[in-house]
Figure 1: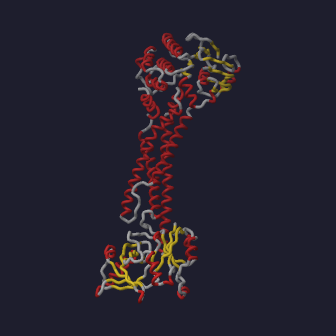
Figure 2: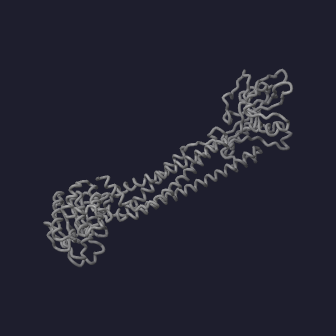
Figure 3: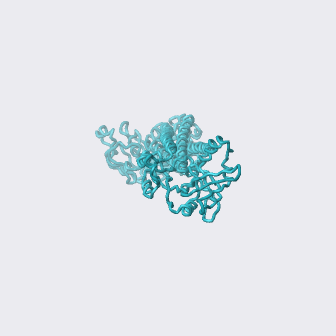
Length: 214
Length: 402
């Protein structure tokens, strides 16, 4: 799978971003699904906007995004669902869990969509990230750190060729960051997938092939 | 777990905020709308049955009229001025609302009826008439005659028996006669005069509400006219016509303009029929409106529930649920609710029809006690309309969240 970005620039940020150089905005990029990409994005450079544009959540941009040569803008609701279900997974900065469901239900909702990961494996991952005892807790009662680990596990419960991450470890301590990044890397390798992580600072969470400055 | 748990979680997410009180009121609104629609279809279709006389009995008696030429001062002196000619038949066939025309052929010879002898004897001159079979409201099995048969079946106007029982018999101190007793008594009919005189046995086989006359089979009148009055074959003064709507102004104007007379009471009755038709039409429109309101309430309920679940829908779409999957899930949850309301409406409407049929049966009006084709069509039609509405509002709600 390929991700192609052509002269992309979000309309609301156009004025601001035009004034300085970016490796991503208004550039032509071709990213293969085997590549690990780090995007260093200081505040206000449109980090979350980039992830949302790539994932098809917003369309207020000029330029074009192609997933496997298909213009994201032209995909139907069903095609976007297919993309999100089996090709591109995401970890949102704001987690986006269902607050009134339990941690386990949040995972089940995603896991049963494709059934590619077993219940047992999902439960193991919860244990590995230290939230095994939170299975039956309602998501809104979890701490940010716990919610973030839950969101990470949820993103891994489907087949994917690309994993998009928006500050995935912002609420985690060093130890938990290592645990989570190891799990992510393991599953990314199993899926033969690529990853794209956007974060504020330069980081070494993953062995990046390329690093871009946003 | 897996699929079952997924459905359970989806239900919790999308339908949990469904207030049961609201659901019940939406269900009731839909049920009332459907019930009224079905009841009005039932009223309309039963009314059509009664009017078109499908039930065999000429229940409302309004679609068959006996007409003849008006007798006025000028025509009194002219012999044969009221005779119906073939031109008249052709002419009346072109009249508005007329669907069929038949001649009431009279016996153009002397007929006398007599019964018994001595003190209890009875003798009267009589007239006979025949109508084409397709215009008869009563057709007993014995309704046939052929040359050589000695017994002639007779159908008597029920009016005549009523006049006898309620007016003539009490005033003359005569015994009352039930329909059964009249049918049981055979009497003698003497035809013709002098050397040509023949006696027959006559038997009343039934009573007609439609034609005020003493009716015998057409074959007997044809034979009798040929035999006893050879010059008069084909002469008739009355026609029986089948009309769609006898209260049609154009039809009444036609009759007046051409100096035809008919039973005015029947026309008055048919005005009532038009009034009932207007009322049932208005009921239909009202029912459609209420059905539309019922559907609207139900659809608004769905939209409200969807609006409350909009954040969940948005998030589900974001984690890879397809719009189709979500609409299928939601539609599958609303269809049983919708169908149960429709089914309850059908049950209520059918019970209404059943009890109405029983009630009307005691008034000699026969209607189908069970839902007919029109009702089933209305049920299927309503189900399709509701399904489309539900489908549309759910799809709209989901697509807005993409």
